[in-house]
Amino acid sequence: MVKKLLRLLQTNLVLILICLLFLVNRLYKISEIPSSVYWDEASIGYNAYSVLTTGKDEWGETLPLHFRAFGEFKLPVYIYSVVVSEFIFGVNAFAVRFPSVVFGLLSIIGLYFLTLELTKKKSISLLGSFIFSITPWFFIFSRTGYEAVAGLAFFIWAIYFLLRSINEKKYLLLSTLLFIVSAYSYNSFRILTSIVLGLGLMYSLYRKQFVIVLLSGLMLISSALPLYKLYKQDSGLSRLQAVGSSAVVSNYFKNFSPSYLFISGDTNPRSQVPDKSQLYIIDAVFLILGIIYIMRSNNSKLYYILGLLLLAPIPAAITKENPHALRSILMSPMLSIISAFGIYHISKLNKYLLWVIIGIYTAFFINYFYNFVTEYNSLSKSAWQYEYKEIFEKQKEGCVSDQFGQPYIFALYYNKVDPNYFISTRVLNPVNDWGFSTVKSFGNYTFEKICGKTN
Image 1 (tube, rainbow, N blue to C red):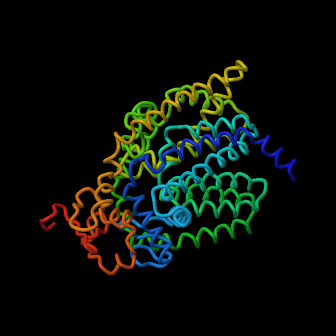
Image 2: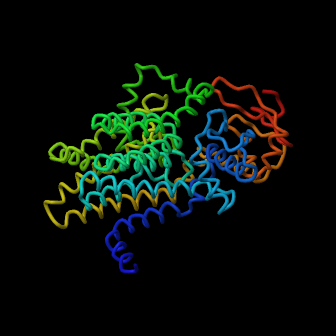
Image 3: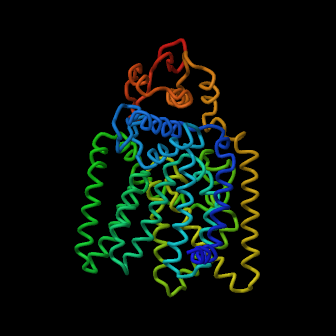
């Protein structure tokens, strides 16, 4: 047994080192950088605390499948993972963000096995996971409380088992289950799951795998029923439809803009360090080489990567904010794999060239990480609503302006307010045009645009 374990560690030593590198830079000062929890993180943290202590969410719903939150109905997977995290670590920023690190790690490992399944080349698989682990696109999302990383992790593993099901049909059921969990993790993966799993089931039907397709279809339909019920009441659907079809194509191509990818990046400071790009400039070279490698390859499976890359921006394209790094997060691992193809292709010219390229990528990441640690908080405090942290760590009652968000959730989160007390004392404002529910007051707190005046 010991010899088998040692052999396993030796075989996967490089992957283990990549994972350790990821854990070190993601966990470093995770509670302090970013400087405070954003309102979605506070909502996730408090609803998890409410479930942990009462078995209900902030609205009094018992173990909900969709959390009403501000009226946008948060999905359950990440919140329930924070329940476990808060049980272990308490109610704090670390507990809210730690599951994202875990899901990020699962994404990196999943990408390794996905690439290995496609290429049968360990070197390319390790390169893809390494680049993905240090890419700027994935960095902030995998150390803060974003639901998208959970969705990404399950989606990558679902794709892996979908590919395995081509030769071993039993894996189709597992793949379907993982697709469903992904769809219940983040909204973007509802759209992507319906496309990718739909195609997978059609292919299995073509191969006359009727029983396994029937079982998978029943699982999918059962999981879709709560989503249908939600969309009947969720104002989030109307927000999704607010983008006209004429804008979808333009929005789609914005996510492939060279300026966005290699120069300016996502302008939302919660998604990227200001003035930093989504990818390193060196990626431009290897992405081109990687696409050439795919086009010249005799392995038709590599086209799956291009297909997934082309599908990835669709959830972002049909919404207002574009380009949107979070909603198109699937682009990040797919671009990392393509860059790995390019590196593998050119490194054949010289046996030392691979190490030079890895060294360059490492230098780029060290510079990015240094800037993040030393500058990010000063550049993004207000974007992360640090002012509410300052207020509610000191102020235990009185009026607080709600001009800049949902202050009530910060009062609940930072003061660990008893959920039953909150429910029994709160007064709500009317639902606004966006469908968000706002709290007018609870306990000794009131929330108005200008304190001392009525809204």
